[in-house]
Image (tube, rainbow, N blue to C red; front, side, top):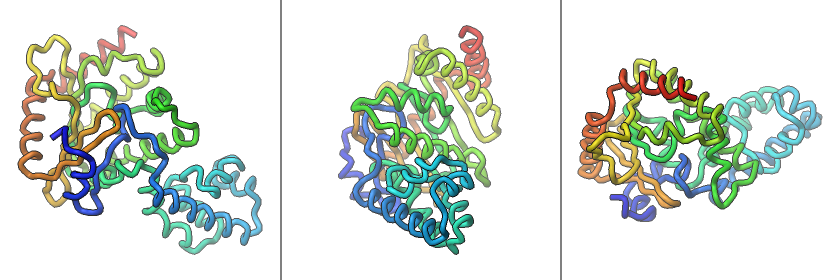
Length: 300
């Protein structure tokens, strides 16, 4: 499954769930958007500028009313930065745009992800169940903002500051999955080594471990740790995510070193789900995992 190319995956999945990749923290990815996405962002920015000028408002004034600097407003208007959905709503209201800006929201939201992750981002929004096994970094859905910035800053080739801001905004928006109703069932298993890596320094890790303890208390979330001294690990082939969509169809998402695949074959999805079940049985229980994370936090 891991050998499947992105092109192969794209030809087998519905347009709204085209293959994704490079958005979590495995190496690779990093483009602000594909060419079509950049066009959407540029067109939105031009519309925003036109409406601002029509309203007789300077960038400084609009920035104050939206909670941004004038330079940030310029970045939005010039298509160099993508505003979050709430900012688009507020700008539409402040500028009296009559939904001329909010109509762009869905397209702009998609454009904030690398082209190869847009399908996976859409699946997360439709998921009734998400199962994730990670071996290199905390899952993006679980990260604190400080942890996000630390891992994004480590990317090579280096990401420019505006792309990092875009990635952080997009990743924080994805975390709305925890508050969605009806609540999806979310399960995360991570190697112990992931919890020990001090990406960004000790304080960043401390804040990240505290966040995991808080998220682990949610009734629809189970966090588990695969200890380093475990003699058996069905996840030896690496990280993967299994997503069950609201129509019951399962997808398997894998990314590594700049390549990714979104597997749609029901047989492969069933095998991945079964493999995840074995991984969960080999890991510490959720209660044991919370106690383990508490001990790690106490050691920092």
